[in-house]
Amino acid sequence: MRRINHNLHPELHEKWPQASLSEKLLQFRQLPLSDAQEFFLELSTKDQYEIISQMPEGEQTVWLRILDPDDAADLVQVASNEERDHFIGLVDDNTRDDIQALLKYREDVAGGLMSPRFARVRPDMTVSEALTYVRKQALEATETVYVVYVLDAMQHLLGVTSLRTIFAAEPYQIIRDIMRTRPVKILEDTDQETVSRLFAEHDLIAIPVVDADNRMKGIVTIDDIVDVVEEVATEDIQKMGGSSALGAPYLKLSLMDMLKKRAGWLTILFLGEMLTANAMSQFEDEIAQAVVLALFVPLIISSGGNAGSQASTIVIRAMAVGELRLSDWWRVMHREIFTGFMLGAILCLIGIARIVIWQHFFHTYGEHYWLIAATVGITLLGIVLWGTVAGSIMPFILRRVGFDPASASTPFIATLVDVTGLILYFSVASLILRGTLL
Image 1 (cartoon, rainbow, N blue to C red):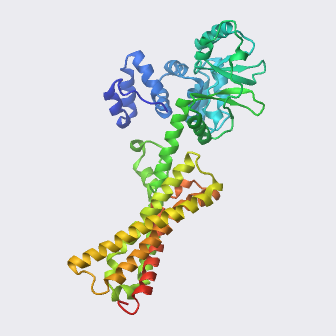
Image 2 (cartoon, one colour):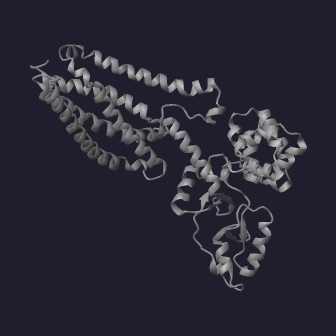
Image 3 (tube, one colour):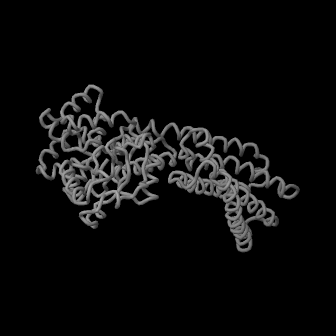
């Protein structure tokens, strides 16, 4: 997926997501050729496919051939099985070979993200020879010429240099003498999240992809991985919100698909929240004897749920960007126990102060207000501590059993803490208020 330049026909960009396929094709055909090419190159793969699939074969050939091989491979993957061979047959022989090679990889690994067209030179070339060779490659639609890779005759990756370094060197210098011999590189089957972390850690614009024998297969560029990061982040946010990943733009998802994505999790969470009613029913006598306890139920359960959601969000994000691994679970729990205790202590003091102040001015809670304050304060301390620990550990448990940590959504954690929070609250009340209000 590519970024759309909203400075180019902004009214078209605004209407594009809501337009029907026939309207899109009509508006696209009305663009001047240069604008249409730029607009087409910046559309998502699915939008490109929708446009091309409605064109006659002659036009399909033109638009397919302006795509880089990796982008053309993405479009072919979106097409039906019958259309794939047809589309592949419309491109030139070199591009066809590149597409077929790329289609052997999964979409979510380095091999599926890479472009097979990159600037390359031999280690024994002079700078002058290398400049001439790179210039020739730039005319052949190389993905980028800013990074130049040094390969031997068997295509083994020996090193990397930059166009800037080559320009700054003397014409007689040998490439071997100005290249870096330990470039950051990735294997063909490296997953896309690992690739995105490498870009972030090393501030690169491209990473070479090699096979197990260190033969270079292509490059993944920063614009490719930005799309991946956006896609993964979108899925994680949707899961953390308590729904399945939508898998399509919001406005393009049918009502039935939207219901399917959201109804499942919502039903599960509803059934979980029913346990809250069951928990309260176990303490009917306590509530009947001390109705004042019911006033603080929303305060108790929301505080625990908020603490758990906060902790899970922080941990899931840290896991997503590679800051945390499974082996770090104990360090995280140790930190979160302390953090949860301190956060709980803060809310504990605020809760006690609130009851004492209200009693002083409004005489709301009767003669045993200090016992009620102690009940609420101790419960807040315990529930915030429990919510924080549960929210921070749940993503590790899910990853350990093979699930996406983002499934530890904030609604899920909140539901878990709600039920346990009520049990904790009324258990503390039974101990402290027995013989007075209970």
